[in-house]
Length: 244
Image (cartoon, rainbow, N blue to C red; front, top):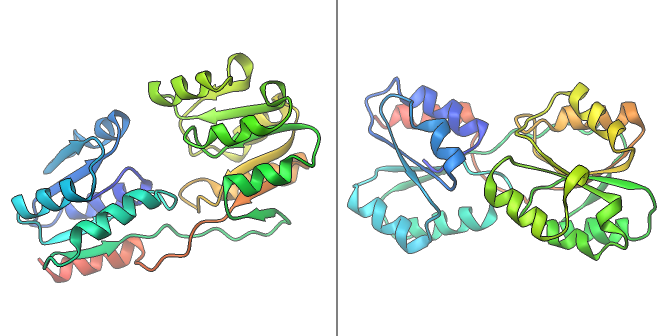
């Protein structure tokens, strides 16, 4: 399993009750720590390209590969799919359940589109799209004062954010998902006019972000997730159970 998400934890919890050997691949040290104490789970940390994944699948005689990576981890999903091509191994994509949007939002398809929209606006911006794409926001005039970034509390994310000029009170390092109340407190603290987030689904706290934006009258700019085919957590568990 390629994990690191809430869905990954739910599937693994079910798998530990079956007669299977479980290998979990995570990209970061943070992910490794969250899985390493689970019985029956062998954790492999560090990013792998398609060839490395393929060698691992063949070497460990893997029967089923479950891709439970983040909905926006498109490079990882592409590598996993490529690694499984031509093998007898079954590949299952575990999808995150979407959250209903019951308030008006600004929908865009990428961080670049979000920045293009924000160029035409005034007011503070609360950014919750991750550290990897923060560079795009540096194109905004006065971004060092106007933008507030919320990133994971891991050294790589902090180092990259600070290198780009997000420092001091404009950099918040916390692990989500966050409650509606905490989102509200943060938006009010930074006096945000705009809240930029990815459509992270129910497990990613998207509902709470919607509610916080509505209560604080903050414009929510949503980066929509790519279309994918796959299974829910419950469907993945049933599928594996049928094969063991």
